[in-house]
Image (cartoon, rainbow, N blue to C red):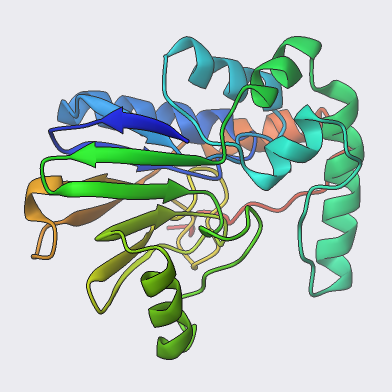
Length: 245
């Protein structure tokens, strides 16, 4: 497990899923705000039309990134993304995405994905924080906000960190359970909470346990450009659409 030393507020994004306009919008917003450090929690590829561009942009920017379940499937060519589908539409989107992404992902991008780790320890003045993709237990476990209190408390006891940062569900939230704050940073490419704008979080370790520890930032992006890029592929992925008017 790699340890990153971070002493100041930092930005965290996850689940870009090949949405290059979304990632570019997030990085521009982080730069505009002057946030000095950025961390990615994985799932750079899958569903979106720009897996290579997204993965290599994160690499070239020197942004530490975790391995997401989709990154694992593509990078190691397992033939499985570790995804869970509840509807026929989701299964169809998933099948088209896995086949297309596996075919177009470059050797360079796959090699980069294979270098990614599944956990980070973030060493801060307030103590060590844990960063994962899905959960501390499994890369593809979904930690939804409505998970029973007892289940979250057991996880907090098993992984006694003051904060655990993760993504995977594409729905942002912060929830304190005992001494642990669970922070889902949402999706930097394909939000699923009814807001079409991509999402990332700014975490201030100095405010751990207090108001202002985490700020969720929503960023509009060039959705039309994304649709043009999708149209040039065999992907059938739907991305939440901006409201007209």
